Image (cartoon, rainbow over all chains, first blue to last red):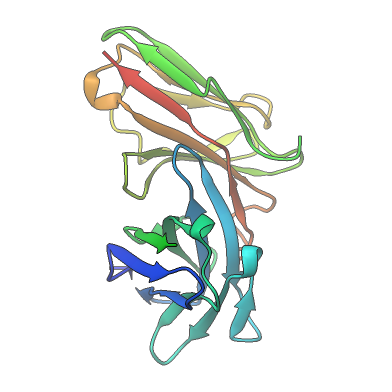
Length: 113
Length: 117
């Protein structure tokens, strides 16, 4: 079965420190990987995606993610966290020509001042 | 419009009432999705349209749920005889391309927050 895992329900980081939100996937076929962020009482906002090419993808708000094919991972990173980065983060994958997004369970990111 | 627009943003319905949730996708977007999201959880797929054709409705939880996109742009999700378990956020999303290219980004609206009392 196709699946996405976000192993941490919650990640706590001090403001100014680097942050990592982990995502691994298990699919049959070519993966297209996405990160979305959800602030309280808001919809999902697209952050970045990996389709092909450079394994390091840069996105909105200073976030980046690295695609690692051998480890089937797509971890989200930011060099210096802001309190305003506190939100719920979702990793998702699409496979080949399938329109369905397979979602991770989400990781709550808390940045403390 | 610049983004996916959903209305109403908040809806309180009495149990047994019918509700209609509207979605205005990004102009020119071929694909349209409806998702249901419980608090703190990931989105659950409900249905998918390519233009006016509803290609997948496998996620609709019961026959009380019905979605349409008659002219290939605006879509409506209708819930008949609402039940308390229907309380959730209903997210609409759109994407430029068809299902042929899975690298297209899916853009989400702010959601319609339904509470059934």
